[in-house]
Length: 81
Image 1 (cartoon, rainbow, N blue to C red):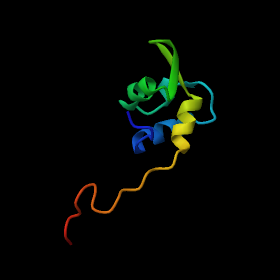
Image 2: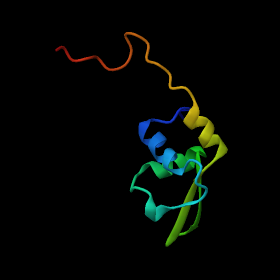
Image 3: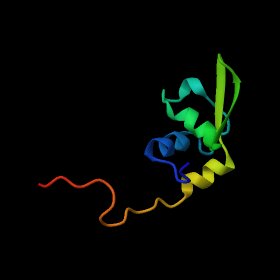
């Protein structure tokens, strides 16, 4: 399990940052929520009709973690111009 969130996870967590409990209905629809819950980066409460999420301390630490740089020669090959 990655210790650093990807771009989509970071965007979702940014919407929760510093806001306490946020209603699911005002968040953009995404499949990222389940991953974030499993990793413990967000927590949820409520019923299926009234779900709310908030960023956990673990999630905040993951969000502000430094993104590792790719080493030269690793990752996707670049297309020639």
